[in-house]
Image: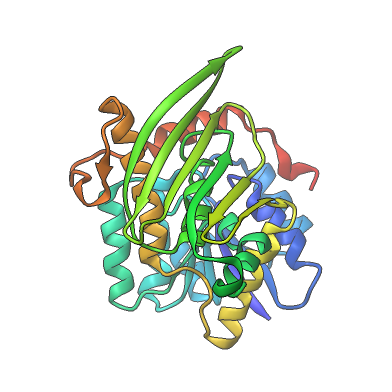
Length: 314
């Protein structure tokens, strides 16, 4: 059975992942290292309720004793530091979304992967069965993708990155630019619209709703027809975890390569820069090397302040 060591339990993902894996016999969370905002009470409850073998005092020690690491900190600016002990030991590491939050870290991740590091990720929505089924359908039957429309809610980047990954999962790699189109404001709620161009000629428009969860609604226009579906968010953990287990058991990778994961981050970075520039189109290749990106530490502080103690009862 595949043994997983998780770095932090900041979000609901470790809980949801455990609950899914416990239904089968392929993998288990066996260790946890915590330097996030969850207190000892929640970490100890997580260990007890899900039968973990050990709470580790260092990531290095945990990396020595598991098959794969899961980095699940809400502060994406810490992801590389927390992933390195697994990479240094030649072990695969899954980095939960968002993989990283700035262009500098994107390039570091890409460099590590080019040197052989096995970095898996990131958004479970990318692997949703609705998306996978559409991509797998014969192109001569469904037609070639021309345009994609997608929706997402909650926040700009931590949750908003799901939409960039879902678009990438459909269109494939090759995003060239992003442009902020405009903003709607009604009853204190805000929705922003962005327009992405791909080298293939595909375009994508996405709505990012701030402050309220929205369903993942996707419309795809092809050379033959128009297709629409709503992603069943209750099944996406299974889709992601099954692919991770498949890789660990067979070595065959069906998860996106690192360059596609970082491309999704760059799409979001270019969108933010376009908004700040009043809607000018921003090429991914032109993101400044010193662009600060999205502030993971600030997001984590706000997330921690609002978080309930979910692990005490689950």
